[in-house]
Length: 297
Image 1: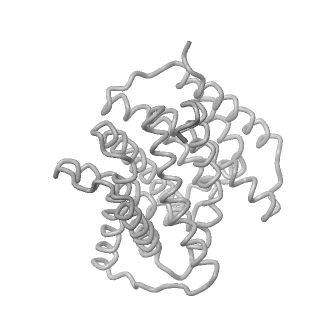
Image 2: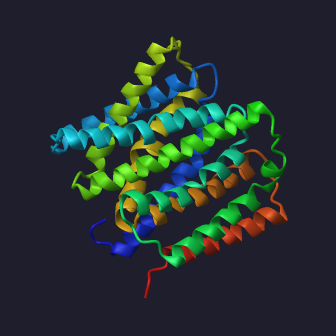
């Protein structure tokens, strides 16, 4: 991408992230079967980290870092490549994917607050306003799921898991920003982070007596490969690279756009019916997107 301008590179990173993660919602559905969610997450990041290690070795990348750096890469891995996904897999056994998307979209606000607290970032009024428009838009897009939510103990517990998963993902975003500021390239940080995340999931699965089953079916295997290669290796590289370039607040706005891509797939494959609320919400999200990505004069 060296021949492209900085703005063009950022736009390309943004589009790739949104398209891949937007389609990953459909792939995750095929992981929720007979295999325990914790084990499925472990499989995903074992495969992703293995491919990443092979790439790093073949490309001769530096893989030696200080103990302090490894601690932050472990934090990134545990929060962004392990625990948050496990909790979201569990929550989506009860919640609709639309409601989970609404909850996850709050990472925009969490990243803003955590960026101020831990990275000493300065809040920009334009970014705050754009995020507000986006959050309102995502609420309108998934308004049926929001209004149909029943406050039973099972649903409330699932929603709490989704909120906790989002908080962990935000912590992972902050850890990645720290690692990039410390001079650790995204590829190396992700490789170690995915390795630590996979080992953590394997350890927890073994300690809690989970059964290490595997579905030798085309839907499960193909979705696992897609999630490991595209949604993990490629999309996390594009997203976290974007995060290092434009900041945790602007990068997180992509989380408001990829549910719209997911709805596009749902329209084609699952006969999703667009409503007036959904159209208004989409326009608000796009307006917020233009506002939040616009450079200050």
